[in-house]
Image (cartoon, rainbow, N blue to C red):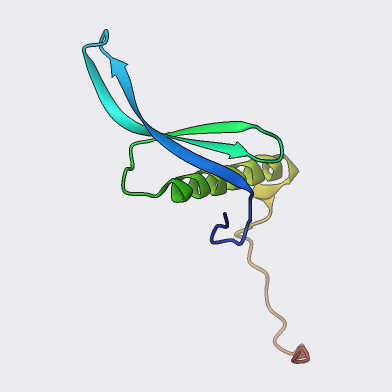
Length: 105
């Protein structure tokens, strides 16, 4: 399986219909449980979704892409992620010369 960012994975996704009951078992809503099995470790990850229009692989790749992004932000926040951008203005030196980088290929 490969996502739009070219991350490849060797997992076996599968799905099944699930009912989630509420109000003392009088009502339920239907959803789909997507389970991803990692072939190398045997670890299973379950995802519940109400989107029946997506393929199983689309649900899995979308969720794991989001989790990768969340983990990146969780990793970067204590390392100054918020300090990277600034609204400070710096005067430009209009007399400076800028080199054009060489073209490759």
